[in-house]
Image (cartoon, rainbow, N blue to C red; front, side, top):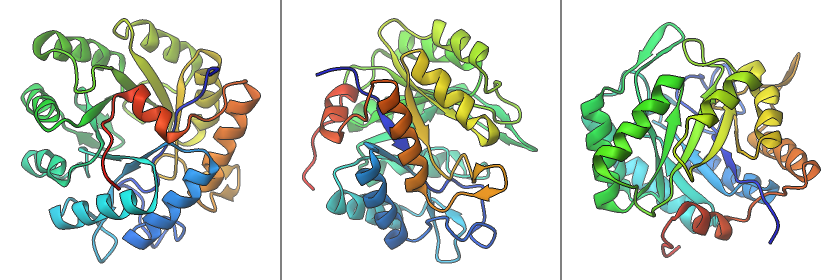
Length: 277
């Protein structure tokens, strides 16, 4: 098999309000339909934040578990839960996310200014979360918002050993106000510091989405797209739905002669265990 591109879709996030962005999927039914559409468009992984009945961010354990099960029954996508939640969520609630038995989860490797707020990820929390992923056999994706977090990733691996599944995969989250810039020079610097053998995706927030996507494809990386990070398809045109962002990423990947990676191949690539659907 030739080279392929892992495409992750992050459809919702915790920042945008449904009232401001009607196309944002916030109910389980909306997430399931979005997942089906994005799988058909070329996504292999779905990165999930959930909302309550009023469309506000929540880490409710029952809703998390119901969402994981619904997505697993309806699609073949790898279900990756966010352990970041919203910036106001307490650490214990974020740790309990893993009790919903996702295939994978995000693990942010440090605290970062997030616009006017602070996304807290102190070392004790990172260490406890990482050890829980190992115990529960959940594959972590290491979220890196700046170059210092690359160093923290090395510390985590040196202290506690390899992740469940044996493979280190990272996501460079670029263009967040307070984090690293979303440009090629910064992307190359971050990739140069990653552990030997690690693979990586890149996410460009807002107007950095296209520069980061093309830089990632040009340098052997993979892609994360979605309405968590990008609400404008082009200047003056709101995103109609997550699938159109996946379609654009898949088209770019095919142009680069690295077509989208099927979900079954992605499970092997990331070290995700097969679960009954």
